[in-house]
Image 1 (cartoon, one colour):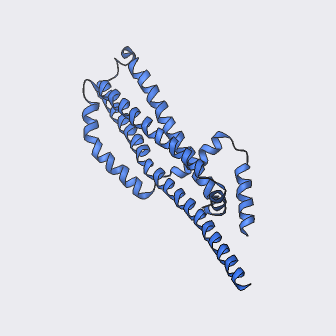
Image 2 (cartoon, helix red, strand yellow; image 1 turned 45 degrees about the vertical axis):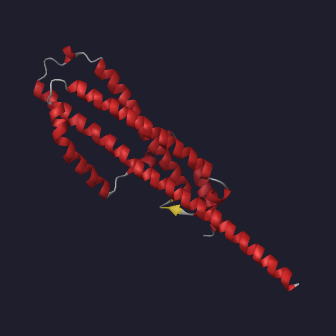
Image 3 (cartoon, rainbow, N blue to C red; image 1 turned 90 degrees about the horizontal axis):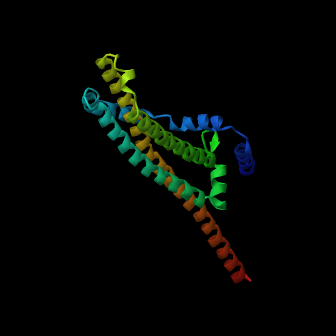
Length: 218
């Protein structure tokens, strides 16, 4: 296929109408953890098991967990601000030259542009999900009716708290560590932008040099 045909196909792909759920499912594929990420998450799991065990079996488990949620909320909101700024920067970078380059190149089945745009979308949704989760947890835990659970065995409650806190921390660690990939993608966008601008500059220099040689020949 020629570059023009590739660009045309990628442009058609961008204009296909898709529901939020379809876009979400497609974006989630980009968050599939690599082998190294899984190993990292397992290491974090080993590190936090003992501290979380102590928290889950304390008398003030609820207060300790609320403090973790509030810390998570502060960190995630700050990182979401960085993500939003980075996405705006990506949109500002996408001029004619960069857009052309990203519509020709492909990452897997999708164009570079669609892949990067989809990634920035899904990571923003992930941070919004955690902020919403934190909001719901804070409201729920601060207004929980303890009379509903007084007949449940304390050990069972502690074990459930232990599992829930472990899962919650792992989700937050994954989201925070994903910021690394976001920064790397922004770096690649800068490189592609510099490449497209550099190619145009070289073309201009070559054309000017050829024009100068033609004048000298005359």
